[in-house]
Image (cartoon, rainbow, N blue to C red; front, side, top):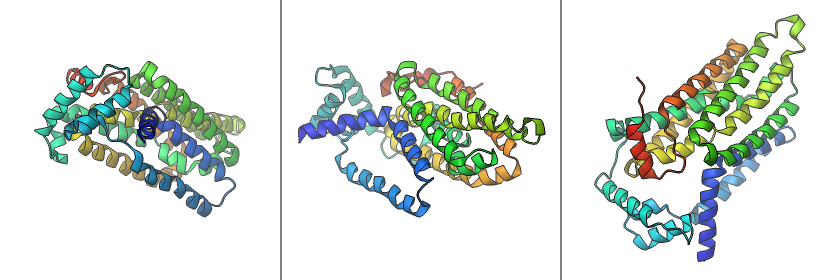
Length: 329
């Protein structure tokens, strides 16, 4: 049983940190391809199966070492930390730092949402909420839900376009998974947003040039390249890294409340973009993509100015770096 728990623990850590976006991209790819041949009602029933598997899997996920330390479960805390770092690792210093953080959080328990808006948490809240808001307002939810319509408007086969886009997304997610701990979160975020911005601009340009008779053969090519690249560039970093950063930048005593706030922000913004996307396309197809291009450009600046690098740092080191990070002037 101990061996099984250790295996589940390691797999959950690995998938949670490195493979999140790969799994999301793989799921989207399956749905894109299957949607071309399966009725949407049947597809909805099939899509419920992974949810049931996750529900069962929740009973096998081990507790976090920091949570165990906060609850005073020393034996379980030490076992969880050793399981995370490996039997041969020296966890003394990290365990000491975690215990100190847990002890401090005991005096700050019962955090409310309003407590997050204290000056000491301002930077973390701005980064967490900002990344989630910008992630959605880059338009990815609308693009995913209206992919077939967009391909048709661009004079591209929806079946071919969605299949190619799904394949590119998987490759990009694998690439991002391999690069996240090599080049860091900030660098990958800025590269991802820059690439997404370029691809969105190409699609907007293709719709702008559709009215020109002598360029009608070129515009589908521009749109195909742009639409195929958007998902790939987005999956490279912006799709998954904000969730990683969100789990790293908040102190233990406000992590649960802050996590709820940023998750709520993400899904509310997702609903807004999904609801408004069709109206925006009716207003102007080119204008819609140029708007999202501008949001991507702003996200690059936001990341450069506000987002701290969390690669290879403990929670305690990240908190120290946030207090020293330059603010927007």
